[in-house]
Length: 364
Image (cartoon, rainbow, N blue to C red; front, side, top):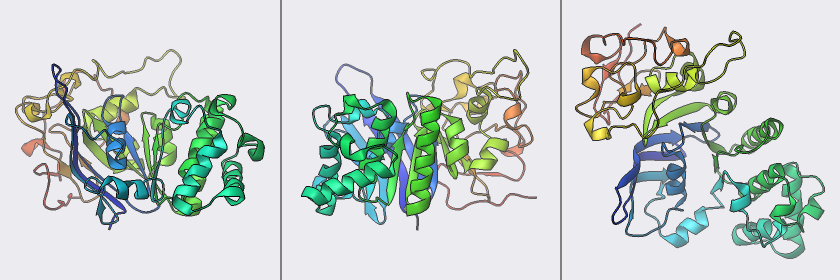
């Protein structure tokens, strides 16, 4: 059984006089103990809202509706009361936020913010808590940790603030760690150090990690399984290597083709995805990516695309997927889309309903 099983998670925001926004629309994925799972996509695709829903950090008010399930070791995180969630959050599940300067309390020293977690979940206080806090800062690579405990967030560099957030997150040795864009606004050297630190934490403690990012370079170096999100839904799920070598969904291909390549020719132009994330269809009317997709065919609209599963545990939501041999070398806007094969999917794959009963076998 997976450590975390998210099933049909949906988050809707309603405000009087404004359009209803369905930020997350039926997201499903799982995380095993010790596994690194990526949630990838452009800004606005629902990655961060998904993590906030799992952590129970969305406001509980009339305009916010959260549906579905998020089973953590047999406990549905979306159904527990606030007291139970406060016990789980920080002790069993922790989160690293993307902006350390706004996530840390500006009027409290770093040491107070670290020891607060130790007191709440591990019962440490006084000198024992301060000694443990210093060890945590040293573990995440902050020099002179005893002095840093007395300093405030604005006195630390961006890299040190991010490390301090990581120290707070791992203070109670959580079983699941959620990292929401942990390298945003950091220079390349510090990014590499933070990612290496997260790798060590996963390797040494067996902690499961959900890596939320739009940086496919981070995904290539960190993740075991990758979930690609678009307009609030997972459009492709695969292990890391198959996703990079043979992406099937046109949106995944577009993301890969948008990355500058070191082996590319001088002056070679990138192949960006046309349009913007605002150019979407409601999933009930068809594929949300259809307005931006060069492989669009008539069957892309008229109803939500079914989920295709294969015996390799790969899944994608597309009626005209990219042929396996094409891979990321095929530009996302490369002319006329080929006609889909019989049944609307590649040979050896079976189209299913949105929530399939069983996986289908792929022919050799």
